[in-house]
Every structure is written in structure tokens, then in C-alpha cells.
Length: 205
Image 1 (cartoon, rainbow, N blue to C red):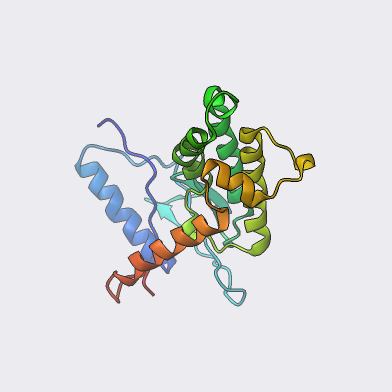
Image 2 (cartoon, rainbow, N blue to C red):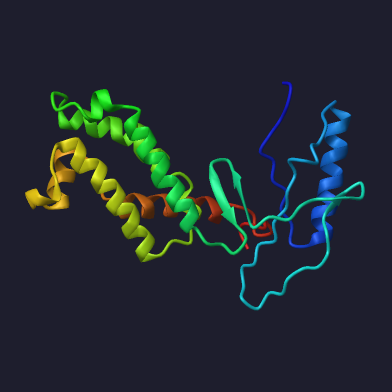
């Protein structure tokens, strides 16, 4: 392995982040790696409106690390205020990219609808709902996801809204469950994972 990437250090205090950063840097150097100062960033997440800002800096050997309001980690966009609108826009865009990568199947009217549904569930939907189990999502954002997915599904079936066919009927044709149901299923699965963690784990709290 020549390099590593996408590493996130999390702590409840600036001092804790600095300590973890120093330990991680020492570990990398012991293994022959080097921590890039130019690519290292930090963000202060405000989960409460009453939480004050921080004036302290995060540094590596005296070099100040730039503070950012958002950054991407493993395909998700993390915002310092916890908002997910930008992440939802990104997921919808990625979902359409995956859809367009399989036009020979999803856009071909000679392909059976059930087969299209299987391809959609295996390729497009995982990209569209990636990370949804951790989103503090609202009804308006759920509606945006539903609208984007229904556009894809109607296109697969060769229908438009002018045909006045109910969404449930179109979904039954290709065997695709409702978006909100899959989102709820993912959140419940993640909830079970959190429940099984030790009581002293930060995510459990």
C-alpha cells in the first residue's frame, strides 16, 4: 500500500482532536507514511443553537490546519451545522449518474420491467440512499427524494405524469418499494446496530 486516505478524527473538544492528531501522525510516521498538511482540514460541528463558537486552533507541529464549513467523507458531505440539503442534492445527482450508466437496460423498452426493477435496486438505489440511516431528514427532504426516484421509475416504464398513473401502480409493475419505506428500514437497521453497542460508546450516547 503506497498511501491511505479518508481518515476522520472525532472528539468533543479541541484538545482531544489535537491529541488524536498527534498520535495518528506518530503512528503513520512509524509505518513509513506521511500526514499531508495541505490536505488536512477540520470542522467544528454545532449540534445545538446554544453552543458557542471556538477560538482555539488545531495544528500539526505548530502549523495551523484550515477550518472548513463542509467536507466530504466516504461519499457523504458533512456540514458543520448538521444540514443535509447539500448531501441530498449530491445523492440525487449520483443516483442519476448511475441511472445514465445503464441506459441499455433501464432505457430499453424491450427489457422486462421486473428485470429493470432488479437492476435499479442493485445499482441506482444504493447510490441514491447511501448514508440515509444517519440523516436527520425532514418531510420536505423525503419528498425531494421521492420525486427524483419516481422520475427515474416513470422513465424506465415509459410513462409520464400526463398518463395519470398512480405511483403505487408503477412501483408494483417493476417491484420497487416506496422510497420512504426503504429509508425507514435503513434507519431501523442502524438503530439496532447502535443499541448493540456498549453503553460507554460515543455513538451510543
